[in-house]
Image 1 (cartoon, rainbow, N blue to C red):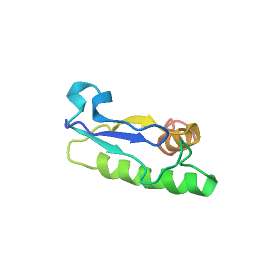
Image 2 (image 1 turned 120 degrees about the horizontal axis):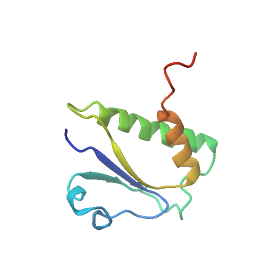
Image 3 (image 1 turned 90 degrees about the vertical axis):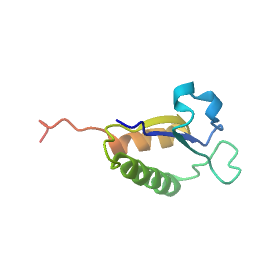
Image 4 (image 1 turned 60 degrees about the horizontal axis):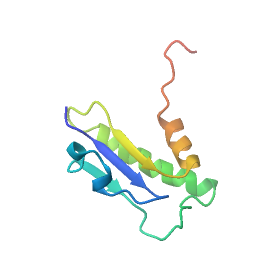
Length: 96
């Protein structure tokens, strides 16, 4: 199984040296391309848009051959963390 690892640093930067040594060469690190002063998420619309973009990226990564998991390292605002988690929350199959 190939390792699929995504690190997102928006409140603070994430560098490869902060990751465990075996993961340093196989982690995709995303950082904002603007100076957001720790507040990348400005409003609900921005939150939905950004979590949707990251969600689509995670879907693409999880569709890679033999991928069973996508590991995340996050340094993000709590609202973004919660919204992203909500998108991928597993719903028990016996509910309905």
